[in-house]
Length: 416
Image (cartoon, rainbow, N blue to C red; front, side, top):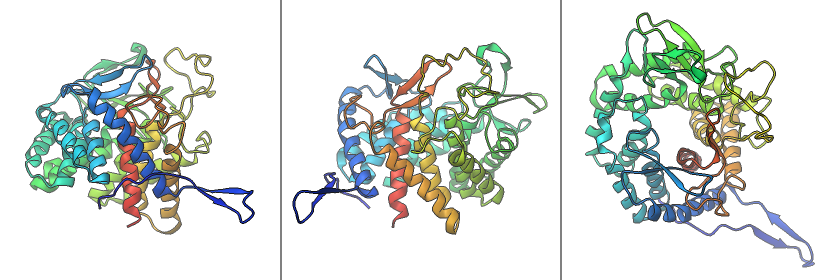
């Protein structure tokens, strides 16, 4: 249902004496409306600044500049996806027009086989466009995108290769077939393609990838490895490591959020109870971890600086005496938890829904919500991209915005 933006305000109630003022906290719906209003203001500016359809807004640097990615990088689809969510909420034609332009600019990406992120790029853009408009011309583009993704699948490994061969952090090992937890997010495209075409190969690839990830990325306590490297000839596990987390044995917060989301959506398509159990285990690890702050916006890694977790890179705790949070991890987890709650009953259902609601309430306020124009263009502040590499620390990231917008839509849909 289309919604009209309304002004956001805290209602002040005067007592009969006229001397005491009490404040009524805004409802979740009012917070959501305010967040979309802030998004509208920031994105109006971003649409003016980002006028080149070959340069996709990714972040805002500490130097005060928009950082863009090209068409073949992994986050290109989140900007048009965010615009689709703006149109879905407001019904304002300007957001639809912008979403159409930016989605169309990605058309050639349907043939991209350079990495595994085709699902991120095409399903968040064309997938949302198809869902919202019903434009069937998007279907063959998405189907070709799924075919391109399948070209990176190895039946020997039983998984889709994430990155091309590369050394591990600090060149400790050579990764010839690295698979990362993030890759679970691309399976939704394959499951959709299987339903749309009747081609069971899409389904088989997606299910086997999920099973391989389930077996090799997840520890007994439901913490996760970021990267698993396989032997291309035998499919054997060679290394279980990290690239963007604190250490090989730690749990990178965004990777954990990708896992919750990916296994939840995999259960949606398969109804395999083992995938649901995995999603719950990953969610419980996240929500019940001793290092999760009270506002449920996690540290960028759950084990930063802890004894027993030794990084393969030079970590200097004095550079960031206050450990940075990762707003993007909270946004992804919140969206995932809303869906996960729909597959549960009773207290368990309410537990996940309440946690997700708590997260969007936290993100709808300072210092996370960008109400004070800390940056001119993005909705959320305070995400972390790649801490070990010293990149994107305490900055806005377009995918944090995207999943926050999605989480708010999922909250509203849960109230229908």
